[in-house]
Image 1 (cartoon, one colour):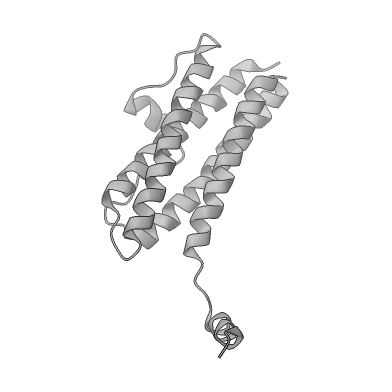
Image 2 (tube, one colour):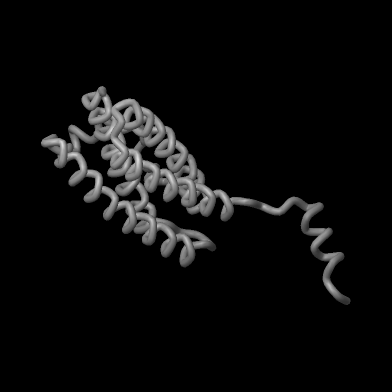
Length: 162
């Protein structure tokens, strides 16, 4: 069992979760544009869920007698997620956050593989739950970005009753 590798990967999950939390909250505060109301609420829902996840991950790390990373310096050194663009508009924010959901999934998959190698079913379960959240978030963000093609618009228009 390689518990040390699993713990290192959990530190990465914690750092990426925190980075995504900060970015999502920042975008919640600063979103503008025609989708303001819906994006403001969606981003709020997502950053609140991430806040709970951060606490859960930190406490899980503590069960291994490990210190949870808690300074910006520590988290920055461990994260894969890039900081938010302070000039991003609503559409760019959606693109960034959708991309980051996939970065989170990759980080989680690596940690899951390490937990599986360590034969730690509790950690595998926790990580699988986190993967489900990020997969759903990616789907939601990507669904908002879908722009109908001209052909789809014409087809829909033709199907409407006269």
